Length: 297
Length: 309
Image 1: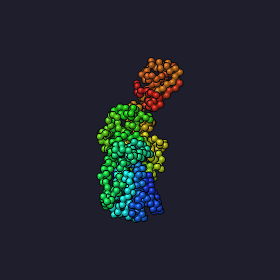
Image 2: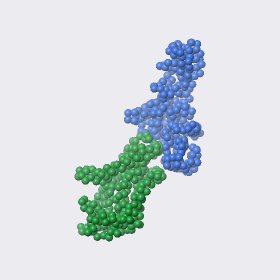
Image 3: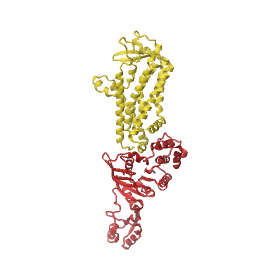
Image 4: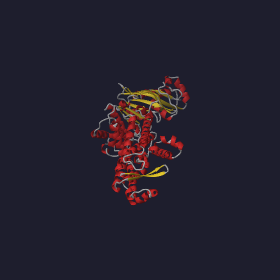
């Protein structure tokens, strides 16, 4: 298996399209950092407009590396599924398109092994992509904007809320958030891999993955009681942004943030379990379908 | 001589299409076994079943005296194959492609071994070139190197001369003969050209619409005793009536105006007898029965039963 995984990673590393995702992330992050460095105050004024009388905070300090990373993640983690799909959706369909699938299957490796290795390679790609995001959006932002206490703007029902996390309480939250995002994006990788089995070129599964993510995200954001109760709990998109939970710090009755706390850990844990269940189901389905598939490409 | 491949009552049905129909054949150790049939006859589907790319709908495949269904990995470790086009990773070099597939076959590789393999197919000087820059012939040769790199005992080649120029076809034939005669490999080669099979195979099978039509030793199947003679006369009906009164009656083909299946050496005697019977001859054409039979499969609707006499 390790030998096969090395081969798979070698193949991915030699494909130019692999680096598109890394370049795209770097470009987006750079644009954000440039914009905030040039005119971050306007954004901050807009965000703090509604609370300017009740919230005391030095606005210059608010734009720091931690805050920047949070803003970037909020935007990027919606687009990154497309970048993950770019590689994962190519796993089987790309081989079928090139005609190499029949050569792979005629080698002494089982189809289950092949799917598991493809999935492992897609997961490693996802981890590397998130590591790159962490480096560009967190490390570079800290270098450019410095470290300070972090402001979080949160919509809770009809209310807007601002949370303050002290700078010595932030880094572990980012680590946890990136770990959560890895699990969330691995669901996308597993979905793309599953769709990849049915196609003979990678365009179809990439588009199908993006469509499914868009449709499910829209459904996840519809506020209708019957959907809230019967549909949303089963959609993976309802849990994709669960990483934000690590930044929702618990407060005392007086509203004072409790250092090192999370407001609703059971919810994050349940979200993680549901995402892991999605991964398990999608990979198992991929193995079952692929084992029965006649390779005619 | 032990059998390397034993296929019993193999069938494959795609939805409502029967691609392979109750097919049985045996490939012996050291054979160059020709798998002949027109396009769509079921050759590629059968080969895909031998390589476990396609699951049979029925029947059994034994390779190296082991059931393919239960010993797939053990069997495929000893099989090398080129299936239709030799598609490889175009964005990788010839060396990287060879290295990847050698490792997948479970062998420990060295640079020397891989370069030796590339040398054998004449690609050593292009080892670091990307496959996307290769001609069809070079891709085919690299495909052969990939199939042979793990030193398999059985080599399966599906239409290996497709897309090759005449020199490439000759090189491929020489390579197959070398694999069989000098290296003792068993080779199963599919083609839709009888001329290709008859020069390299020692045993062959012809399939049509998924069914076995003929199987046997090529030399026997191409025996001159099975020559098809087509006569053309001023009055074929009258000529046939006259022939029916002679010893040639038993060689006449049923339902055909003037066709005889006979030994090629007896043709001069037949012509003498026809002249003696005042049959006015317009033409005499001879073709081997197998060739005639195969052509009838590929060009004429319906076919003549071979060796009917």
